Length: 173
Image 1 (cartoon, rainbow, N blue to C red):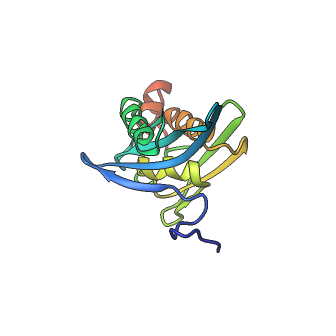
Image 2: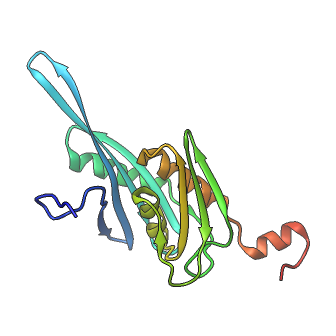
């Protein structure tokens, strides 16, 4: 496996634990260059996924002239975009599909011990939310930004068993 000089594999996300039991994962850092009279001026955009590991997850996107301020802005935005999702022990209650732009994600519940079978962007969202057993498949775009948004859109469609029973007026076996 090819590793960089810092010992991280290509495509791995950085993970930090913040105060208040929130885990932040840097999914993507993009570098943009503006050509000016003196040469190139670089700016950075960071995509961060936040979660408490107990069913709350959010994402943020921040831009700045340096990497640390862009990550801080993304974390700040991620805290504002937190959503709650219902978990069924360590997995999700039922199959869901999410879509954002050209990115489509299918999330399937898995038996205990399966682990998180997902790509880097979808894995970051699932692990931040506290999902330990899940099967996923992504279609269309492989860009991490719309994949994260599609995954969160799918997780927002989840409904716990009792709510489905109440809405349908039946009892499920």
